[in-house]
Length: 269
Image 1 (cartoon, rainbow, N blue to C red):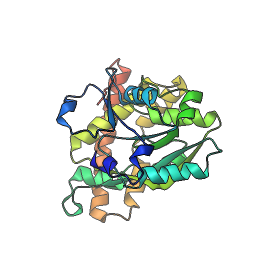
Image 2: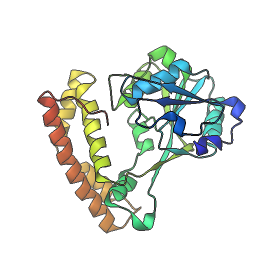
Image 3: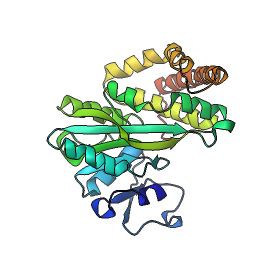
Image 4: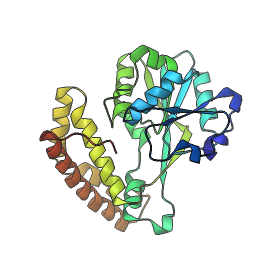
């Protein structure tokens, strides 16, 4: 909240919408700025919450980030400037996401993994999507192609981006619109994310795509090993640690795929 309050963009030019998606923490424990609007969404899932905000938003540009992300002070200003230079084109921009630990000198194994693998937004854009940890979308895009798929607990941002691209919208990476995402410190956080991602892959989308994700889930993470080992951000020991974590996550993902194929329901968190 402090990072939003310190945005360099004049507060008269933007509004802050915070969506409470049935959280365990009551909203009155936070000191909300007087210019923020608190919304509630009883439908489970982050994409249902985002749709609640979209329906209530008054602006022509909608900037999405997560509750644990820390936007740079010029995040909104740079995003607005970008669109002012391309106002005549149908564009969506995916901003940079810097994954950082609490302390580089004392990282947990999970933090090492998250720092190395991170959220490579630029690579995502090359694949045709961006994640909502840092995504700026014209309101007209939602009017044209529809809202996020509320049935998904994971992957709804990728599905929306691909739907928009198929309708003539462009997706571009913008390094200057940047946010910091804290690295996950605990193994259970990585494990939970892996299970949530598998649920999104296997329970939503075309049947052919679901089958593809099932098949891919049985393939050991050799490609991920390659990206980890070639990383220059950390020591060789840390890179090996990332490969070990990938092995553990592969087993978690495979177990989750088998559970879902046996009729289990996807996990929200």
